Image 1: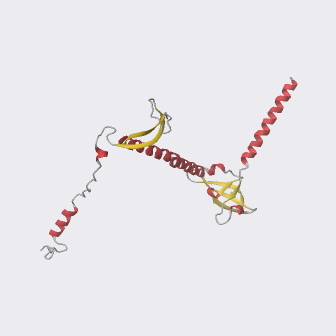
Image 2: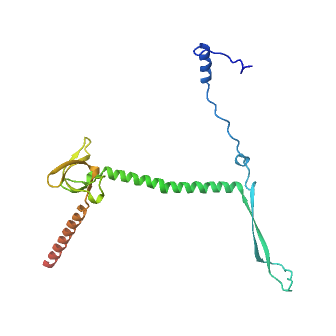
Image 3: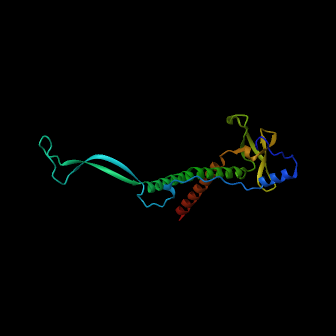
Length: 218
């Protein structure tokens, strides 16, 4: 009867609006939880639920006299079987702990190590401007050309930002062309450290020669 003769409610009638507000104002109920198995919720002592594993046969030496074989010889070895009884509850908990420890080690080894390397790379990229000085020879990056064809330039002037960090520089390409490039596109040539090592080595040699001369004079 209700399907053949439904209740007719106007679209914007006050009664229809009251019914809608009552239905929409109800709290959403969560679905019923699934039932846990008895093995997971019952506080059973160990070895309540067990598993049986058999192994064998093993030949062991008997402590008692054995029957002679068909040939009339006595065989001191007898067959033995092993019955291994394991607790299902403790084995499940032990397996769960092993999986959790393995996941923790893998997370520390892969995720945290990758996160640390990523942060070091970002900090090195952020502080790359401090390694470039005025008058230094750099390589200008160009994504449209291969790396072997990147041009050399000389840093004419460093351009710091409002926060004081160096973000761009004026470079000189060739003999006359001067342009601006961000620090991220400038790669310093690693010859500065070698020159410093040579200078420090020469200073050490000079000090050693002076010490030898003073010792000879004495």
